[in-house]
View (cartoon, rainbow, N blue to C red):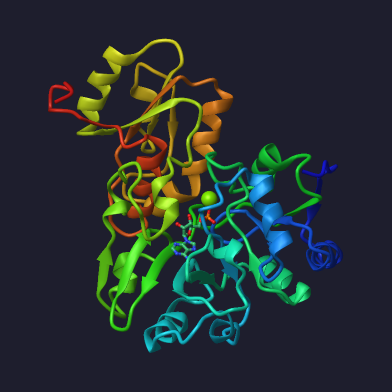
Length: 347
Ligand code: AMP
Ligand code: MG
């Protein structure tokens, strides 16, 4: 892999033009979207796409999402998409929804990891749209973290992971959603949810029935073939051992009395952080899953900076974007869940 002096550049006109030029030359650049920061390359150039996999250390069997900035690109990059895809695009694009559809021959195999389908998204971020338009390319882009690390929601977080590995990161400020896009497989009359995100199940159900793939809430057994390869990786993991804790706050407090010790931290809802026997980080109000989504990956990174060894997280509600928060936490926790009874004892 080439060694770069990575530039952190404000996403102004001039730097957008320079980033677009790098993309046209087959290089890769970091850029903000409304979900998380991404690592972009020309989706039609297999060598550029190889550089993305290399910079991230991403397994070759994990496909990339292709980002577009006009509805006209949807039928060009896919093969005979069902009517429902256009209906969903009309309802939720630009926005944090990725549709998995049969791919057209324009999409190289390395983008789709050999699958016959491709994930397509039209982001709402103005910087992302400007980069796609200026480069005049569809951009393949996974999250801009090293594989297995929490996704970056600021340019500085992306720099932590990508410094020296890519030429440039465009800084467009913190991401407004904070978790990656909703990924759905689109059939003729229904969709299948592979990854929950900012376009929620409730929103999708306004348009058509939604089937939730078991991989959203359950660990995929080793060796099993999955429809959406990202589901089988642990993902988003800080160095610490993370556990999700279900039960009331009084039960949580009692439980933390037994767990306290060096390197033990808690992630809790706003207002709970000062009445615990261990240092705690607040991740939004209990009834504000949008705030939790914005903060989750930042907090997981902060746990690393603090040298956390074990992190206990209050279990979030799973409605709306809360399902996305819970899905990412499950993977950060390698599916470890503690159930507490009212006395704060693990059942
Ligand atoms: P990331 O780019 O890191 O946000 O991950 C994108 C995720 O989208 C992958 O891990 C896959 O699970 C999913 N995805 C992308 N393309 C496809 C596809 N063609 N079929 C199924 N899932 C896909
Ligand atoms: Mg990712």
